[in-house]
Structures are given as structure tokens and as C-alpha cells.
Image (cartoon, rainbow, N blue to C red):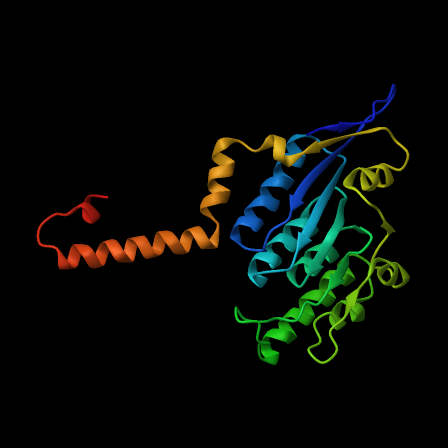
Length: 237
């Protein structure tokens, strides 16, 4: 869907990428592809519409690195939750806007069972949070506090604004677009409209759950083939 405010003189192009999933290989591909498409669209600004409880640290690191290297302004819109890896990604953006009732923080590293990982992993995450905050002009100690296992920090929109981790409270991506456009007329282009059938298929195949199912099918096929004399269906497939 394209949302537009037309102008006689100038028109700012704002590219919207929705990140409303766990942070994994699929999310990494989604954001990096979205940034590429934003350049193709000659976007003046990018809005990263975030709603996630977090995910894999390596995928989050790749996403935050891509954002930091991107040569156009990127605004994070925390559309309810930017927890854990989502907080790291948000802090990598040039500006952060939050929806009423949303939160950002709680970036302690945990395993798949929700258990806190040893301090080796926390130290790495704290360093990454500090360096990212420093790169985007925010207080690195606040970012580090989001990783502390003793008293982990999460911020509401008002609290985030008070410490420089939120530029404003907005109720929609369109409101964010109006702010970042700084009074200029604008058009919002959505990545959802730009995804080809091939793009969607690749993103689907990168889903960890689907990959696990494929792996189980492969292992099951190998087992059946071992137990079945001759050339069977599993081998042919």
C-alpha cells in the first residue's frame, strides 16, 4: 500500500520496511533486501517498523551493521515491542519513534529455553550495545543497562524520550513519516508492494521452523533408504 501527500514542488520518498517477526536469517534477509530496494526507489528516508521480542544475536548484528552502513537516514518505529535483539536494531537507527504503550530494552542474552547465558555472552552484547549507541549519538551506559542481568532496563516511550532514546511518540508509521519529512510533502512506499514471488519464497525458506521440518524430512528419508533395499522413493526425491 502506498500512502501519499502530494506537493507541487518537492516530494520526499519514504520507504517503509516492516519487521514484525523473530530476528533470524529471514529477518536479516528482509531488512538487507529492504535497504537495497530503498536505494533502488531513491528513498530520502527509511522507516523500519519494528515489533519483535528479539531473536538471534548474529542476525541482529548483521542487521544493525547494515543500518549503520546505510547512507540514508533510518528511523525506527517501535510499533509495540523492540525487545532484546530488537532494541539493538532500534538503537542502530538514526532516530527512534515509539507508539503509546510500547517498550524498548530487555536485551539480556538468553538461550532457547529462556535461561540467561554466561557473562561471556553478556559482555559481548554489552559491548555491542555501547558501540551502537555511541555510533548513533546516544548514551552508551543506558544501552549497556538493557543487558544487565541483575536489573535489566526496559523503557516506556516517555522514559525513552527523557533519556534521549526516543525522538517522539507516534501512533502510526504515517505520523513518523510526517515528522521525518520535516514539513515536506511525502509519499510512503512499502516494501510489501515491492516483494517479488521469488523474494517471498526465499524469505519463507529461511524460516527456521520450515528449515527444521526439511531437515527432519531429509533425515527420515535417509533412514528409510538405509532400511529399504534398492533404489526407493526417498533416494529419488
